[in-house]
Structure formats: structure tokens, C-alpha cells
Image (tube, rainbow, N blue to C red):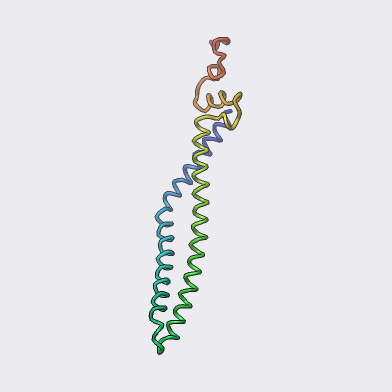
Length: 143
């Protein structure tokens, strides 16, 4: 059980380390996502201007080419934004779930090791006497 306790503690330290790295990258991710959306918005506005200004027959071809370019970049950046958002959502779920499981494991081992072994595992992790955990302290004298 000592090795199990050490392994759980190492796992907890690893999760805390990744969580710290995730908090450090949060502003960078926010800037990247917002720049993608603002660039898409800019191309959308340019496309709208191309549609509104294309009534002029002399500069019509120039606005149609601008409309094609903005349509292409809007589709490209929209797809990139969806892929990036999906990846970040999956990463957030994995980190959140691992933190929740870690909280459950450190509070009570019963769902993971069964009700017969759980009192011993909980006692070792909480640094309490195994005899007290298994209710045999009054039957065995440890002097």
C-alpha cells in the first residue's frame, strides 16, 4: 500500500504540474483564439463591403475578386477555429476529469479498490493505524 500511496502522490503532483502549465498558457490561448475570430470578422466585413459596393460597373471585377478572397479566407479561418476549439475543449475535459478523479481517489478509495481493501488504503493514505481502520485494535495489543 505504500507504493500505491507514493504512486498516487506522484500522480497528483503530475496533475498539479500540468494544471499549472495550463494556467500559464491560458492568456496565450485566449489571444490566439480571439485573433482568429477577429481576422474572420475582418474578412467578413470586407466581403460585405464587396457585396455592397459591387453595383458600380467600373470597379465590379475588383470587388468580385475581393469577395472571392474574403470568402476563401473566411471558410479557412472558420474551419481552423472549429478545429482549434474542439481540441481545446477535449483538453479541458481531460484535465478537469483527471482532477475530479484525483479528488475522489484522495478522499475515498472504495470506488477503485473495493469495500474490503478501501479501509486499509484510506488508512495508509491518511497516515492512520491499520488496526483502527479494520476495527481490530481491541483484539490485538500492539505494545
